[in-house]
Image (cartoon, rainbow, N blue to C red; front, top):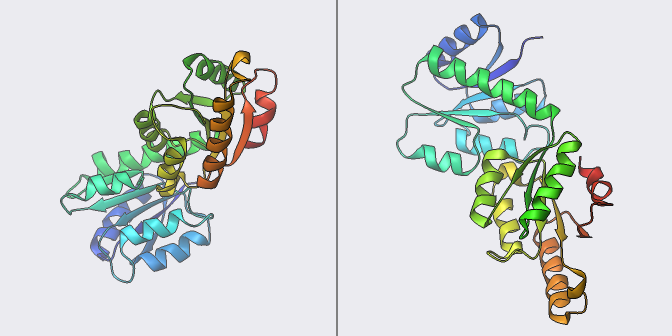
Length: 257
């Protein structure tokens, strides 16, 4: 069955050219001339990818994208935003738009190639879970990664707070494993920063920690651990699974895989 693409543009000539070319290469195409109509169509299901202009009546492309990502039924549909406005590319990428296509563009070399690439990536991501791991201990990150990869999970590791946020946006994990005692940045702040991006709002954030046996009697460490755990959960983390242990790690994260 051919993939169905929704083209959203109030310029009929532009929509017609896109529809003709995409149909010719094997896609099924639906058309809408404003964001509200397109949103209603997307919510009814059966849309595999959306191409939308940024300037439209009733609901502009930027608002349309936000509404898509705030709806459980449409949040996973890949989106290509087409714009001729200077300076829009950075702001669109910042909110997590899958691809930005700047006008003028070539239908064959730019649009069709971009659509094919996104369809391929979307099919692959639906089959394979993705996890992002960030710990203050590189050895723990490596052990977690190996255990997850043995379960067929694709894993990326972050090495500092900035790297974590950058990889969250580019890798777009299904699951985040976050050490609540990271030292380079506040863990609650990192979680709140993630929740600012539409495409990351529904990602499961599982908290863990690791400390050696001799740290169990350190009152300050235990108090810091409890306070950080509570603040992280208040900030939007999904669950705290305690101290990392190879023996029970997969059992603890199984519900999220």
